[in-house]
Length: 204
Image 1 (cartoon, rainbow, N blue to C red):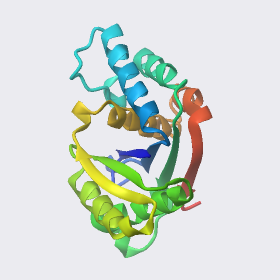
Image 2 (cartoon, rainbow, N blue to C red):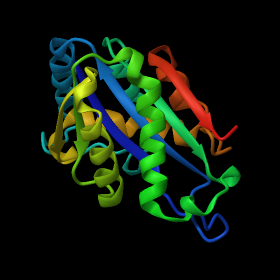
Image 3 (cartoon, rainbow, N blue to C red):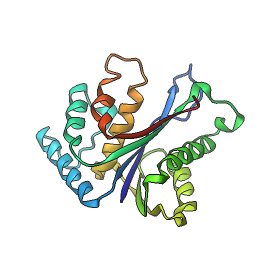
Image 4 (cartoon, rainbow, N blue to C red):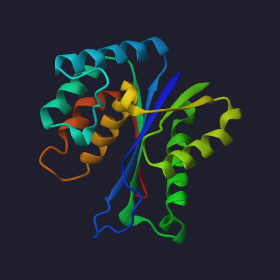
């Protein structure tokens, strides 16, 4: 079992100063490694179809509307599912959330507690090129849980070299965009909703 993790948004609480209203962590879960390998190859093909190099990185915020939709439609037939936590920063209270470390630690614990019933000896892959604070807190949390039976191994990889971390970015970005109120807010998450297993908004 393989799990790929990425986040969208930021931990800042200055909502009137440019911080995002929401923070999203998405987990992409493959029960069979062979299915992950097949989808990895499909994303390589998708890049060739767009005349992109094999080392080109597909990121939600770096794509136009058509590319986002084409990518999500291309991955939809494959057998994976995703879970996510949406932190509604407008409703947070408590001094601890003013610190990035506490914020990331709590968000990580929420999403993996929700995922726990679905995971068995999973290898979890974290984007080494993402937020350093997020990576440190998530990695620390998972290492403390590694003997629980549902997490076997933790790997750090660069999303620029990992198509499935790029998938996690696209899913996290789609979820965050669904909360934006923008004209395309519902389009991307609507495409991949058949793969949505559990998404929690916290606090409600």
